[in-house]
Length: 467
Image (cartoon, rainbow, N blue to C red; front, side, top):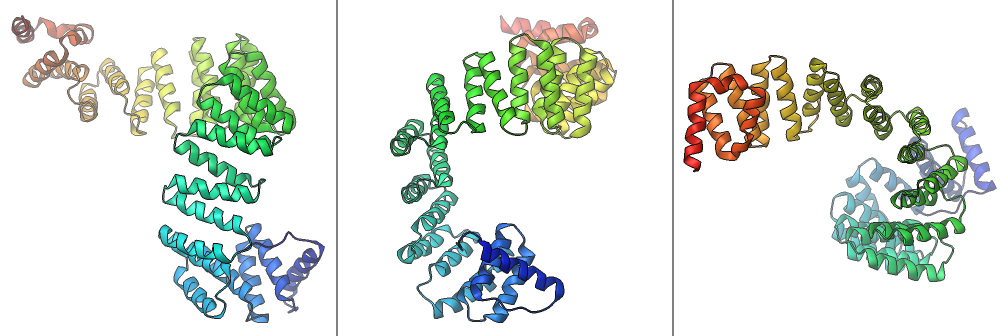
């Protein structure tokens, strides 16, 4: 329900109401005051107080349709849809020209995934409402639920026609264009909008993002500059401008753009990270490290920050420092697969194979099923003499990568190592049939088995058959 913004009278009503709740003295409020009070609590997410105000309001004004509609809103919020629907049916018998009844009935249908039926009711509300933009927006949302982006786009456009400052509608329009991959059409639409709203920083910002999709970086840069001219405190435009300047390899200018945001508001971890990346590209390691450190201090949950500082030291071959930072990251978020991949890789570099194996195992447990992860873990298990574990690892890998020569040759070597010669011969033949050149896996990892008569016979038979 749409209500006017609070004024001094509303604040007095709110103070009196809260005083009443503390003292348990029952005070009288007119129905408009109750509506303002309920609206205030809903706007601030204080649902329990909104329910209390609705209950007391209906006790004092039992015939108020608006208060009953607030009650309906509470029931819908608590998913008591049948009760809400029954109450709306009662209200409809009394007041058939109240658009809010149609809107709330549509809300119930929407929650029941009956979006087409919800649209029918919203179109009825559209016929009687004085606030068409709000209803167009609701219809647009229903079309989004139906994934009918063309109709959704048209209805959000009608919202924007009614109120050119409705940036929520503008964002939804662009979302529809993007989903439909109509980038050039989005630019055309935004340019038409800008003809009548030349200082709309949001529209210029959106034009820039569309040019970024098209990789027209100079046009994107000009768009972000116009956004900044329209509002020189628009942080989003400075951040996007920084991204474009990075694409153009203008790293000092990108640093300048990102740095502006640090003075406009509290520093964002994203800006600190990007400044660090720019300094890294410029070869200024001290400044890069300084900003990467600030980034993780600002936001310890931003995985890109920890990855940046870890990769920085890894590239410098300072593996112990890299390990120190990735350990800190894992202590914060032990379910991050990117952390474990780096933990495994760093430990492998340090030749700390037991720790590396743990890292690769965790990577797999967290759902990273890249072939290289399975193979590297296998090779480490072989180094550790864990042949059975290596075989189990490869059998799991084969479920994701059947008919893979790299797996078959490793299984062949492991089976021969564990005296499973029949299984070894089976996998060796498979490997040769798939990609014979990967026989070098046997030569590198299992050179001893090449001395076996049976192995040489299988290899020679395959060579003769290939001639």
